[in-house]
Length: 235
Image 1 (tube, rainbow, N blue to C red):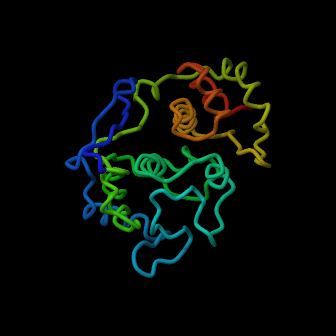
Image 2: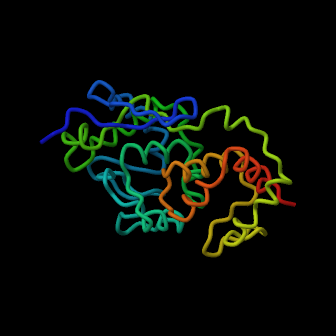
């Protein structure tokens, strides 16, 4: 049986709020084709698509991250896929909003699509190249207005780097303070905003790493801002 709608959760004023996505909420695939031109220097999609700098995007819906055979993915995306990350409307939107904040260490050198409508439209365009695109609007919708970005008030918090240094011991148990990334991604010298976005993605369980979800879940907004300020310049 096909469902008439899908339940989404969006952040409104810092509160996770349920939203019903119906057929009227779907992104505009034609507009998404135009947006995809920003991606086409690295990715192909459609008949005869091949891997370029990035993998081709045919059949991306439901695919495990780093799951296309024959493409050499970054260690970061491979770890994410092994941790359970799959590409669906929400995760694709989160990734293209800010790839490096979503998957630290990704080789995808793209600043991201900040406009939620652009993201919804390009995801709707990609939906058309899935195995069964006619089934996706209900099973895996591409909804306009599903904005997973962080509340501006949270991003505006000025973190205390000294407090961040105090809190950092748990982080540096795994992450190397000198910036090495052998086995574990580096988190030093990150832009503070990217760090905050990444930690909140773990906190909200949008990034699939149970240990990081647990650690981020224990941190409040001021503590995350403090860690971001410290790791931005730990010297």
